[in-house]
Length: 77
Image: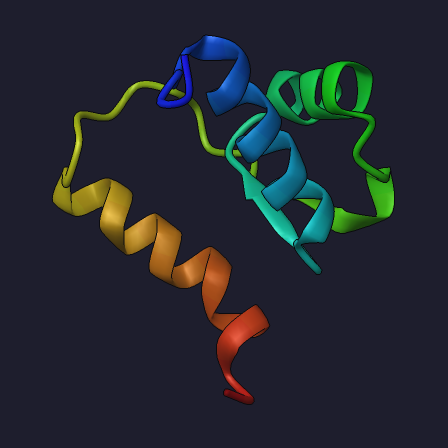
């Protein structure tokens, strides 16, 4: 099984990438708590945006809120 690509492989890859990140943005507290508990991510890396999970993908209101909340983190780029 040299080409095995199962859920364990995906989990390890995502976990590795999360640990390599300088900053991780999540929409709600429970997501941050899961990352800390299950992926052993440092709480200092996580920024909770406090956006309820009530929007559809690409909802114009969600896009507006994301831009507003993320702008301070990216204004110097």
